[in-house]
Image 1 (cartoon, rainbow, N blue to C red):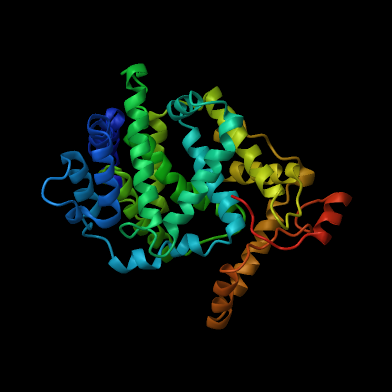
Image 2: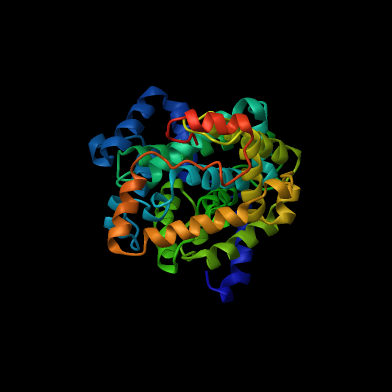
Length: 384
């Protein structure tokens, strides 16, 4: 997204305020009209491809499958077999704590999305479910081969796309076609996409996990294909090849998005509580729920900046427990030595395939009971 195209892009973004996803919207209408027959065709087509449906598949299902199976001209076929190598290099605990929480918070910052989600149930009741669901989808999406036709990441991504279409269909009767735009439309989907690229990277950078310019470009190439599967308008992502382009897109979206409201703050707070609770209860955990909540708050404040985190109701972290500078330094030192030589890089990759690393009690203050638990605990995976 070249800077000289920004004025034109700003006008184009405004035209997308009321844009949905015609292919997915038509499939939802077709499923409602034809019922099980269309659902069976959709399921079979997603797993085995459009040719497996024979001569006369349901029209909307066929059109969606044709778009999904079209290979974008810019895509490297080997990329899907490798997976999102940049995200895969992040230790699982930090991927969950930084990438997932920041991406969800970025989505919740849209009051239209937050209002729609809040109507589905109380934030506290749905927070853990949405957190786990998003974590599973993200991990399926980044795995080697995960986005190949019929594989878990491919199926889950299309499921997310159709869920967005279902939400649009069920909310249209309540939609005021005024300034707020279409619920869960193109611009909200673009916010979600930026959450797992730019915003997640900013959160990881806050804890000292940096990527090179080459890795940055690799990240956006991979997630451009995710955008293709999600039905995101190509004009929104095709020229976003690095963080600089992503920031320009984010600024354009922010200019068309009202400030977070009470639904945004409630959903964000519930999500942070659910993440802290899950991680504190995971095998091998050495931090209390309160300490983890402070850590997540600190990460999000650095990822979003003070103005936006204040709007989202994310509190400041007490100075006594804010050791982000130390955490960043330790992670950067670890990253340096892991990539110091080919041998150390191989060893680091082997380590990433095993259990997720603990966050040692020395990193953040820990009371006596926490230290006793740490000594008795065995290492294990952190929940997302």
